[in-house]
Image (cartoon, rainbow, N blue to C red):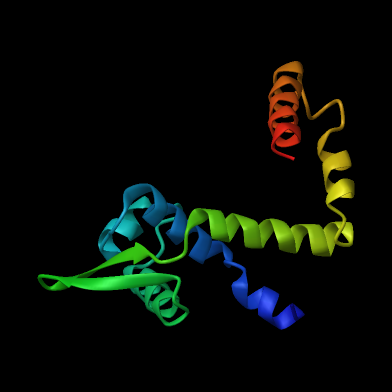
Length: 128
């Protein structure tokens, strides 16, 4: 996948904030999205970004009375997968192993997390 394509798949910070609102709340008007965003961006800013996201096919809109309701067309799972693949590629040279080794440093992982990781690994091994 080209670098340009990857950059187009990434959610810029404001789009990510908007998507988080839509993932949590479901369909919302511009005003409802605006009310949930930190830093109180202008209504017209939120409206413009939502319309850009419609063009990018990240959101869909439906007319409800006099206002559009926007909903996520991109799932949280797809967005996370894209962000993780990009992180692994850019920061770890495409090596998932290097990412995992960095994530499992002792100061970042306590016993409870290790136990959950063991369970996930055990389930994965049984599936193989």
